[in-house]
Length: 144
Image 1: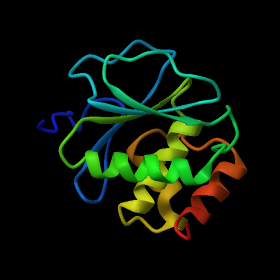
Image 2: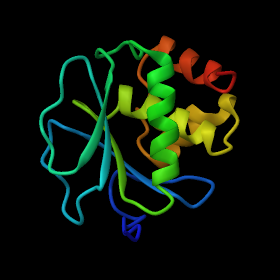
Image 3: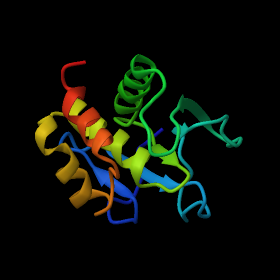
């Protein structure tokens, strides 16, 4: 499948490698345009069904992933798939958990951890990554 996100569309972030990923809040309607082929759903409880392949990362609101190694594996899979597929990250609001995951994805893509939150706030949403512990998680993400 060809990667067909519009980089100018709301919620679509371009990583340094040129890969495109979309972040969104599940509370809002699905954006216009092509559906994702893979989603990482960042929720405290089981996610709603989607019509495409997805992976659930158990992540309570305003907190951190319940299993950090499973979260890292999901982020690595999403980054690899974003080279050729439409990949999205989503939580209910689309800012805290989604922004934190996108910042970790940016670290995997070569953005220094110390710069990743600012990168995501510029490239995705100015209020991404909501809590101090989410910022610390991103800072520590590079070390594994």
